[in-house]
Length: 478
Image 1 (tube, rainbow, N blue to C red):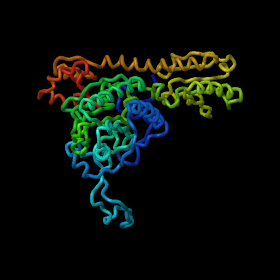
Image 2 (cartoon, helix red, strand yellow):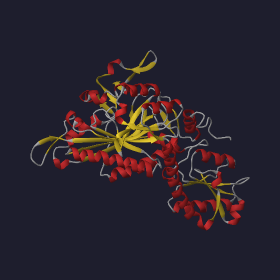
Image 3 (cartoon, rainbow, N blue to C red):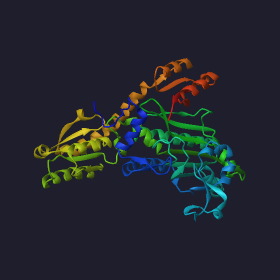
Image 4 (cartoon, helix red, strand yellow):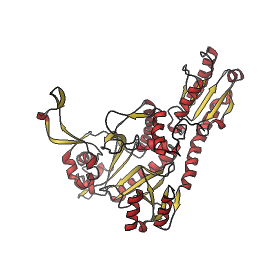
């Protein structure tokens, strides 16, 4: 069967993913190594994702702020243990102007900075410095801050939306008077992420705590949201960290308690990024292109007039009426009245993943109906809907598509989670080409045999099982 995307997922999942990005007009590689340019359609998806995440963040009592892109290198030296994980990926600014030298603009040797700046790979240190000034009394707590920014980590093996040298994210940083409050907050934001993934992105998740080997440097606890891609690999889609007093002490975040005593605060940090977009695309899309859940589709419905020549006034009026019904109902809709051939229009929007495609020809116009096809189910889902019922049916369909996409991903996940008793079962599964998450006793991964398995198959401990933390999930990952 001919498909819009080649190779197919079964033939080469990694290449399929890269070609999907191009076919759906989401992004392209930029002239800057390891970076990407997110195109308007891709950015529209991110804006919708960001808006719904931001709503949840604010509902948790968090305020948005914005901190500098450049961080003095001395701040990182205060937190050398934490930064060790980022040190190889840090981009450093060493000069403050350019000069024409030998006919080319180059850093002016006379403009070398007395102290270099690091382009933020994450902002704990500079936000911690601000918090040390803003927090003076127990009355200032809790302090909950978030910023939506871009960060830079010099990625050696870039892949669009998954690992790029520059990417967009939100990073939250909260301060509390007690450890209990801080840990409860870290767990709360972990749950916020899980709910968002399920109800907005229609992605079921495995949620749990990172093992000590995998937790964030400088954290007492790291809680993660792990997604299972169609090829069985894991994608870490969001994390929430209980940082204890580690950063409070290095950044000198202290407060005067109600007892008149000076005490160090307790902090958390939590973040999600455009990596969620990569997870979204790999979870739902098929060999014909993108498949988007209605909650974050830039256009939930596209209306395509089917004509042999120019669109006449009657057809124009009919499709505009359809669009108005949907717009009045709060549904995002686009009428494609371009002069492109009808089959080309259809494939364009199939590849872009629009949840519902509505086609209107002269026959539909005369009989007062529309033809409607679901993207997630394909051509077999085509049905005809009377004009009088149009808006209500569309609203119901979009709700159904959202829930059906989640159910389909959940059913696939169940087939990719394997309970095993021994490491040899994991080895045999990988040797047989099996993929997915392997659930095994955590203690059995504390052996040289598991270290060898990790090295051979490039697997990692993803997280402890929330239902029973004596078990851990093991998988290959992105």
